[in-house]
Image (cartoon, rainbow, N blue to C red; front, side):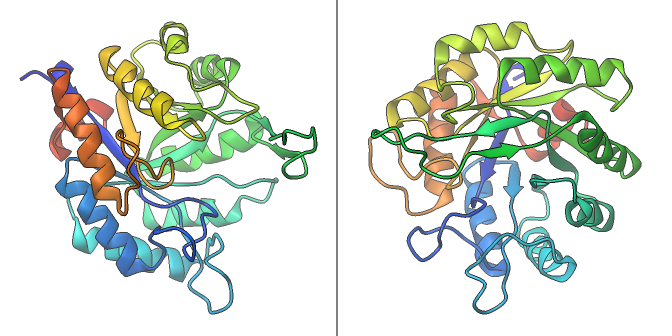
Length: 292
């Protein structure tokens, strides 16, 4: 089977703020490593990793503490040494010293790079804001700090795009010399103030990709049916795929997934129904241009 028939599967094993007291998301190094193993055993080759504080009383808030991040990455690498680690980097505001330090220290094979700004909004039925309006600010100078650091440490950027204009901006970043290699983009769909989770948008977004791009869909906040419909459409159009407890808690039949492995298992089944196969770690590295 040629590489065109292979689909790279990512598992986002935990979220930024998902409460582990309410949901079965992994947060400790051991839990993160076990979740990565479950995903890998079912066909995922990339683990998208957020990091949570292990300090008592911190409620598992996000952390960029070098020791805490290092403990999590060490545990994952020990448990699943062949798996590609895609490190989250997203932070609001201009102070990005934490993620930059972690990139330089741990040098993951891939890292997320939010490629543009978004008013992060959600409205209730009564017209009130679900939370105070937030600007997820990712101006070009901030993006460049990330791409410069990734380039210096041979890290492949995964550009997360919340809207069509952000997809188009990645081509400008490439033309400006902000990164090298073939672009890898994620269409983040389902955020209320971003791109809607609609499969009919995928051909348009694909048409706006920079030349020689690889791409996938991140379906967050989408309804259960729309989410799996997006995965099917993405595979049919030649995209890669991502699932995990960061993105959804529900399997295609509506049953609640109690671990990341079950979500990956369901997604791999869809890949095979469409006559394709999940890429092996070696194939995923070849497809994505990872040279480490």
